[in-house]
Length: 89
Image (cartoon, rainbow, N blue to C red; front, side):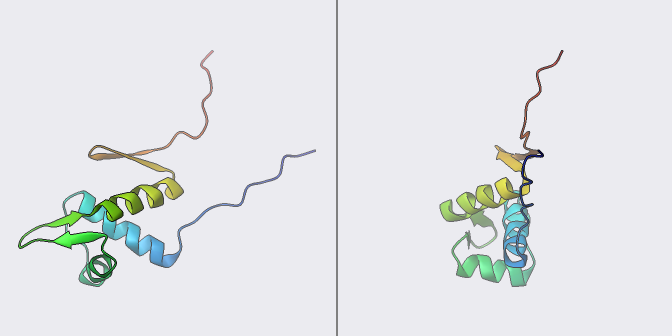
């Protein structure tokens, strides 16, 4: 008997846009204006005179969405998660 297949997880369109904006801010870039407007409205980021920063809420959302994508955000890097470990022979 085959084990049951797990349903694939994908980000919805709003989640995908939000993740794109958050990861852009994470790497110190400015997202498109229509994405930035939503991030500011939902308080995921705040904007000073010349920079954009992630809020605590934005950082948590970035980690949550990255996890759904199979990514691990560490320090200033993003790496694929290793979901299973096989002991080398």
